[in-house]
Image 1: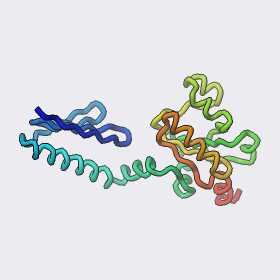
Image 2: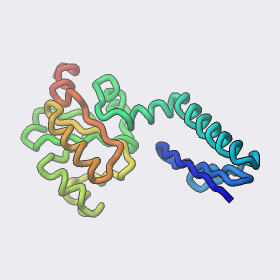
Image 3: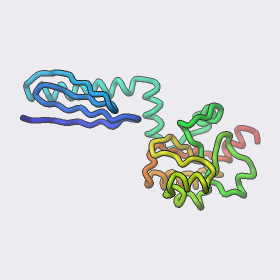
Image 4: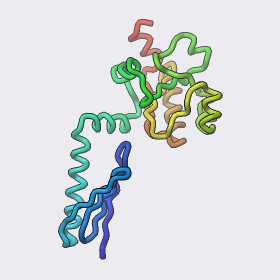
Length: 187
């Protein structure tokens, strides 16, 4: 018996499509959907391919999924995309200022937390409780959306690279960082 398996990792869930002689199984978190299909090997692989194409097309056509895909495929974020995030802060997106304390006194982007680049890598290695004690905010989770900024965008890019190496895959750097923000906000 020949079994084919295709795994598509999507944001927030993993979709597994497996084919055997009698079924295609789709798994979303704890839900399992079983769909029968043809017995022929050719039809199995074409059915699997057809279903995976429909799932990818369906996923990319939805505006919320487009937003999710754009988030994960872009390494940078700009002012126009960041501004609404700062106006309605929530736990879904964490905004981290990696400037040093003496720079933060010049001002900061609303809803941001400070984690200086000099402590950044060590902090990400800490246990959750130790992280919170040291930094006064909850440690981000690995699949959380994180935006990092600094003064001009160079240190924030370094922070994104470090974060990704530590397993934080949904990180973006604010291109213009504080210089761009303060100019646009007339600060």
